[in-house]
Length: 201
Image (tube, rainbow, N blue to C red; front, side):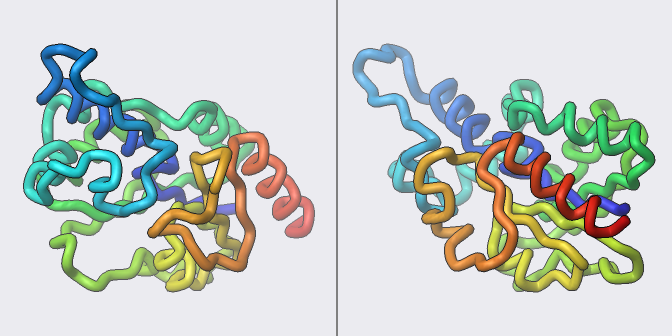
């Protein structure tokens, strides 16, 4: 089976990592500032938890050394990916980003997962793009992403919405209205994947 994994908020806990970078840039006295929580993030641009964060600053964080030197990973995802690879499944990562962000992701992912394939797209955030840039139905594929748009655009045989949030898991701006398979924890994801693999035997 071929697995295509999104990166941000599927492999990387990008919201938590951005919060860490935001705090590092701003806070000198923690007692004076409310620490943002990823659980309270419902907007894609994260302005509901970091209202003074400008679009350019958010991109600066995503491109910055702090982000890539302090990446917080989704707990258990690395182990799941390694386990799938050890069982003979093909692993591909698909991601969007500006040039600097994509290049740093390539370096980091090659270090963490030297066996993987990476399919990056360098694009402006405003571009209307799909992650179905290669034919996912050319062979049985499980596509795992956290955004409804990309799952809806995909022609993969199996699409799974992954949410890192235990509560209000699918009420976020980017993951609403997905009617397919869902998982809001690594245990749930492992169960859904096992179910699909069983049906593909």
